[in-house]
Length: 330
Ligand SMILES: NC(=O)c1ccc[n+]([C@@H]2O[C@H](COP(=O)([O-])OP(=O)(O)OC[C@H]3O[C@@H](n4cnc5c(N)ncnc54)[C@H](OP(=O)(O)O)[C@@H]3O)[C@@H](O)[C@H]2O)c1
Image 1 (cartoon, rainbow, N blue to C red):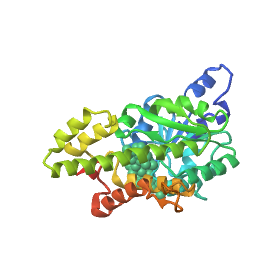
Image 2 (image 1 turned 135 degrees about the vertical axis):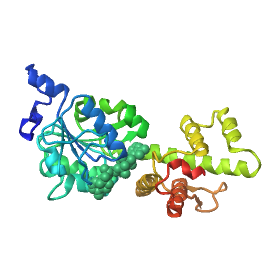
Image 3 (image 1 turned 180 degrees about the vertical axis):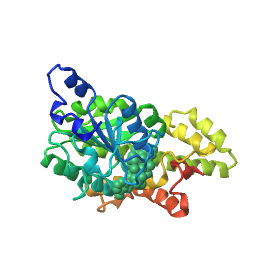
Image 4 (image 1 turned 180 degrees about the horizontal axis):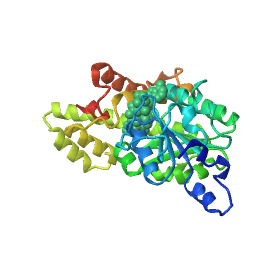
């Protein structure tokens, strides 16, 4: 498919019933930006479900990560820049590392996606980014005429591979509904939560709860081991109680068995940093408890989230940044 053959974004919601229109409505052309561990798996699902997909990755590649040759004329086009990838695209998805990467992908003055984003296109940021950045990005892209959806994902590489991600989505007007047919190709559920930055905020809350549980689980398993209870046995016993969540139980298993780096500690630290800044910005990070007799102004509470961040940051500084999140329990 050549760029000139990609259908115009205005066809995305056309009520016309011509064969070309029904094809684009069912199967809009997509630009997918960022082919890392998650992005490559998600992009593959879109390619295999029949979409015309233009791919971009900062580090150039001659084949898709799943082995398919990338050509200018096949169903999968490799673009040299985000700007080139999004020319004529109806839906643009970004799945990159962090705020800085997202800024480069969308807003770089020379090569960013925003420089060629067609008016009315759906701009979907699926990376885990900070709410403050997502708000800024949404303003800037909408000012340029695009419709913005933030759609971070819950789940890791196995869920990305099989299309079982849980997607938390926020957008204005009907943007999430319009993005839903594409999102449902990479996720099994799309939870709509209002306008940006509600989705990025909730995603960070999910990761804060997840990382906090694993930090605490790792610590109690080590403590119990020190007291003579094998980790295997502790995990089995804790699993008999209602207090161990399904996620903590599954990841406790990986703490014991070891795991490939599905969700590396480097990314965990990034997300916890965003989460801490998010709660800090609204002043709820350190609450204060009044003295029972009301005798003083109260006692400052420390931030649990800050403590969890510190645990993972220490692990990163100790050289575990590339290891799976469950290495915290090692
Ligand atoms: N791994 C998980 O379990 C998981 C789960 C849910 C959500 N997420 C989130 O999903 C996103 C992607 O994660 P991942 O696991 O796929 O990470 P990854 O494998 O490290 O891939 C990161 C991607 O971002 C690109 N990138 C990094 N810095 C860039 C920059 N400055 N400019 C342009 N592109 C840049 C990389 O390009 P290069 O190839 O050139 O480095 C690569 O394509 C992150 O926001 C992460 O927090 C991850």
